[in-house]
Length: 125
Image (cartoon, rainbow, N blue to C red; front, side, top):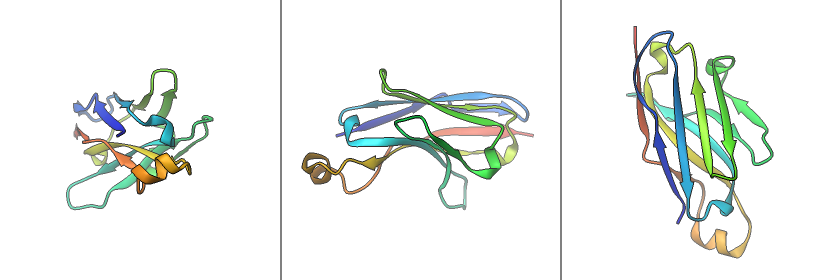
């Protein structure tokens, strides 16, 4: 199975920066799009940013100009550089693998996307 391991979360003051990393292993070839989602207490999980295998990206309006997603396909790594952090960015951040391949192997093993365990980001005011 594919495994996604996030790291880099922590406590930071407003205006500071953090860099999240996601290490993917296993059946990474089954997924083409990698992304970051977040979930704050009492709120639904929301898309933060995602990046396709070819490098195309899209961002939530709330993070445009502050966050940058990138990937290193050779290392199966995805990164989220977060600058000018705000208290409202406080959440658990999850790595996501999506864009499942249509091959029989991948379809038989994955009903949809895959998720990491999450890493806490807390921004103090």
